[in-house]
Length: 415
Image 1 (tube, helix red, strand yellow):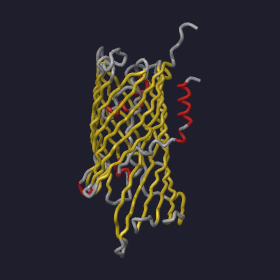
Image 2: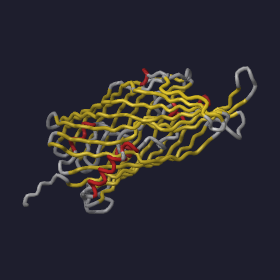
Image 3: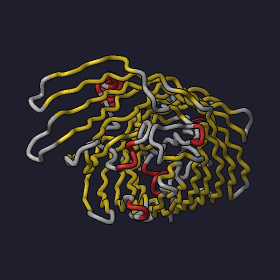
Image 4: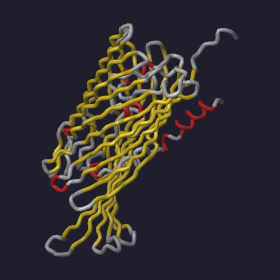
């Protein structure tokens, strides 16, 4: 068996053991709902500000819009794997803290099954939870002061099967069928004395469900240029969820346990709609612009200080390569990318919007006879605000993606 076949088999067999959502965020705002939603796409997309609605799957797989899969080269089988690392500085009016996270991000496969049909399969994080917040409180009808520490980890993973179909020469339609699953673990520790924890309340929330999202791309090619308009959308989905609750004393003895406790929070995937545009000169440069809206206003949380609204994200990206990926001159066959985004979040806490923005930069480096690509993306940005005693995060992240492209479907002329 060839090495590439063995790699793919090992990845598929390992799916039940993987939990990509662990250690992908340290944001305190991941405490709400299913956590912080992870952006789709690879390092290629990340370097271009997260754009991808109107980008094709040419130099790599573009999972942002499933309609792109039918542009995979008919001779190639693509398999990709990605990792990330992030350094964050959290600050408030009272204190500051640094945090480093990193993990395997995703893997995906893609190929052209027929001239009119592209296929992709993969496993990626859908949302991530990772926080630790300590507050100082007073007991009711008492002046006793205690520390209350909230921590959470885990998140939601997705296994997806994507299909893209050519409706005509320049129009393609795609759909991703995803199975979402994961465990969100939340702990509350009560400490009357800072030397030990008096008791711990543990909640293990299992969340799962099927989800469909769709995409379409329309191309307007000319002899030198190509214009693409793309759209993505997905319906609202209420997730299945259950909660196992346990309470432990300071010695770790179990005081209380209950399974399948009814959850009060609204674990849903919001309705979404996105529109994208790209303009490119073949094998030279590409300009992309995306708009994405998620209808979070239907979500309800138990925190009375938290209000939800629809989120809006605007992204822009640019890519240029002096000679194209098959050029012979070092550095001139690289892809150089730059971009940025502004995200108006769905979260409003004490009438303060929790928004984020970032600048992105990256490279695509051809390897292995220029068939494969190493994609690197850097991101610098901020999330949150210092107003009303809230927390602001300044982050620096790096994404690394290996896109391996092998010729699988070349027919031999002579036997």
